[in-house]
Image (cartoon, rainbow, N blue to C red; front, top):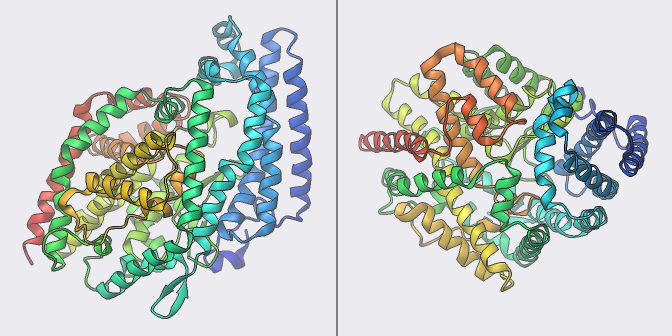
Length: 591
């Protein structure tokens, strides 16, 4: 552990490598080359008994997965902490190029698996293959969307200078664009954090400064978005997917019936949930809807601030009543350099958690500014880390879980923290402030996420026919936001550049939006089970997290006793939210 960095609130990466010139980095890079060559050779010689060939292939893939994961994790974390790190960018390009060389052998192996007529017999006869039953069956089914090995290799290579490069451009521009705020130059992360400031003039000035800075980079980022989405559409056509959404659902091991049930319930409840923003607007002295610059305004007048030490104590206290393993993991995360806390020039915005399975840990990036919302963000990212922890003992190829369940453990942590805090609040004003924090987050994953889903849908619907310049993208974003927020917001000064600053639109995953709503509502259902069953539910919850990497979303729901295709399940969670909005409105009338 790098104690000096940890003391400054930066993460320690020494457990991976001390620097780019660490002998371990060079040795692992060489070993990666060797394993890629080995995999290629094995994929070209598939003669022999499948009961011997298949385990051999999987073992090589395991070794390569672990090594590639470690190398790329280190470089990507260095790049996220400092997007101007030229060495990190160069190394990421090199590693991505090496990774591209696995596309052809991986395709040959997948086609080999798909052609095994006795796959079920092989799975039943070998404990290792039994462990990989879900992976093997999924691979066999997915073969219908595979191209020939050479095409897969070419696509993988061109992604490095295509969608991956466009994504890096968006990340670079948004992390380095100078923002002029009250005579000073600050970062985009800094100015966006001011949305949580207790001073209304600060929030308003910061909002205007944020919108103004986008004028500098809007055209370049629009080219990024257009290029990425067209690449996705072309890839879907080549593979035979009906649409990018269909591809996302398939890769998420989830049915359209489940998503339809979720979206149907969300649309039904939007009008009742949107009243939350009007309650808040009235409380802040606005007539009608809530101005965008006050969307994240705190209600606790004193503007309660947390140091990272305060956040550590707060979270440990809240989690201790749920599970000792979670509590100990949180303590370790704070004390052993898992977290990079503070915003700084060149550091990417937002927050994320990256699994570090080779060292049985995670690494978390935040832009912590000391608000209670920042503490909840930490709880959210630590939920991802807890999900990872429950997968440590899974085999290396059984650690990836799909997007829909990816936000469940994180949101469950939020519910744990907020419900405990609200129950402990006897003062109505304090209770109202806490309910505000919880509902602000919950409604972001309903109203805002719905708007993001609608925006991305419109982008894909239009991209084939036209190139969308910033004015059109802003118009589409505004239309989508009005669907999500309705009359809850004042549309005199909207944030129609939200398409520019949200990195999810530029990732390698399409529709990385509705999974937040999915995870949020599923988390509430799991929490209801915990309230009903008590401590005995914790073991079931951990089993559920472990199973998410080896089951469909629907089967994972069954582990928790939930039918995800039933719209009434989603309605039940949203009904609870709607009642909380009503209680919040009553508390607002207290003045």
